[in-house]
Image (cartoon, rainbow, N blue to C red; front, side, top):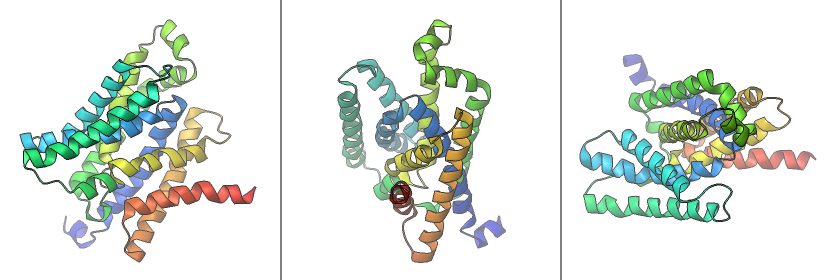
Length: 261
């Protein structure tokens, strides 16, 4: 423990590695399932749960996961992805839940560092943040180990998967739960708002000409790890905020290949 205390950067570095691998892998699954908009929704729905959990004396991570999952379920119940109103409903709920979270913080009389929650504060991360990241990583690995074939089938043909006996609704609920865990676990690294960049950009790079979901996840995780480590190093060298730095690098990662064509 004294070694960790003397090397304060070690825990943030380990979290950077885990988040850099986990977020793109999860993002690959969500993009192939056309559920990436749900990430934006869940990330905005986390704040009310964090606030309520703190007010009730519950661990904020539990509240964040529950409220994120609840927001996803509400959105799915109000519409479906084939509806013309799908995006409008999703955006209405995510904006409303974020506003609700900001509204109840002063009402409940609690103190939350909104900047750290929304945009991350990686350099002050602790062992509790690392444990949260490891739990989310373990849940994702469990889902991929025992449900990989179902995840692939539903991503390619949800109607056919349902007809073959796969409980698509239950699988989608499991994906939403895992997504909420990933978002909450990435709170210290990039924040619940900027996490969308780490879920999306490496995935877009990894999916290019990938022959299978497994290969796409491995490639995406590699790109995510490189982007996260670069953002972490630049933050240390130039005294920057890691979350925004990683998000900017994500944009640059998409722009640079365009100039080569």
